[in-house]
Length: 134
View (tube, rainbow, N blue to C red):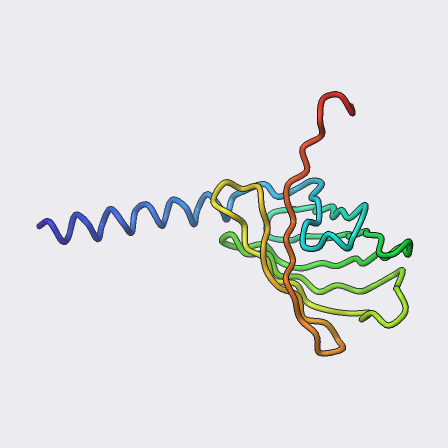
């Protein structure tokens, strides 16, 4: 009976976490913190149920970059395709991002794969404005 209780408890808690992440609200402004080489790097995520629209702006060495995308949100996983609308010369123009929501709901972390065969880390942190800046 002890093994059954332990397995049931583990299953119950993992099910609750999965439900909490799948029903999490990821709408809003997120700060891109994957690289200190970027400045003014933000993403806006619009979530409607399991559908997500994504917009991302950053600056790199004084050059602006913008990409937009859409995809799906399910069980704590965000997967979407992006298209660059304001490119930086030499950078990719399309890609796929796959991110996972942290347990506390404040970080999306994952990887990108672009149309030039490159991949790398993405880290987005939920943006919280400082009261003095409001």
